[in-house]
Length: 395
Image (cartoon, rainbow, N blue to C red; front, side, top):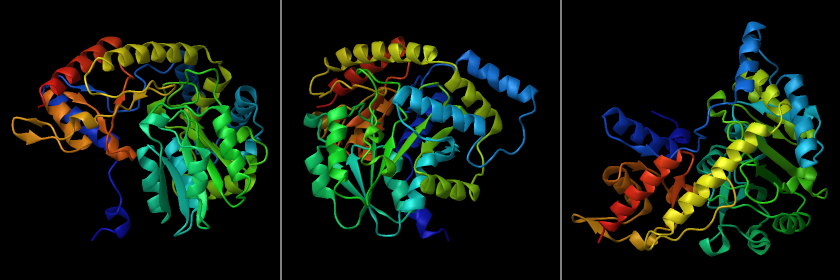
């Protein structure tokens, strides 16, 4: 009865694990949920005040599909101010979250059979949206030893006449890895040879960055017209439930995304957009405070994870995730039941330790699990202690 399209689509593992954690919590079980990529901070007061004011001023009508002109102008100014990038307001399309912005671009550019190069590990929805567009994902592995990043040589070796797009995130979900300016420059030098390839740069974790400053691949003028920046407000401003993201691209692509979105959702929530204007015009004070707290938590969790025997953990340079290699524990057993995969291990830790995590299989790496440290320090300490105890029970 259902279409082939939906039958071939995989359920988001992050959403699935979070749902399972909530179900256990509803049964009275004390579950620590570290599966969702969601800041545990409240949206800053000045942003909420702007939303309340928007209601009082009756911003309750349909909005332009691509977003209020004032918001698109604020995004354009932000890109110039913070990233030294020139994108006019007419090159911005505001969407119901960065996920929709990514889907818009892929659906507008990818034809059946087109190849999209995706470095692994990757965010769970990339491959599924490519699948919806009837494109082909070409996965290029960034190993633990490479800090989960790929090289320019690996990138070029993956390019074929069918390659239409390169899709990546920096800082990366799920690994927290960050590409340096020199690494991005080496990518740009490859793309200069292949003018038919577009680049989607997912920069949603831009401000949760523990290196000197965020670097965008769009800074390289030779390829800038083929770069589509994806960003939003959810991570930096703790606005996940507000559902607002955007793309910045050349005018032809932006007009296509406007057209696509006009047939699916039309414009993003009016109140959310007014809050977004306030966020981008209100400075980075609250963003910096949250970033500093994430850095503190990262260091705490890193030191705790290093104490667990057999667990291999890199030091993430951004986002709020750890992506430890758990292959040491695969093949071990508990009460006669063998842990064969990272998924098995996550289910075991949910049942035995009451900690919800996400399998690395969902992100393209069968040997890892994702741990979000977007939680309080006390919860994180308790969670790692529970994980350590449960892993020690395997034999």
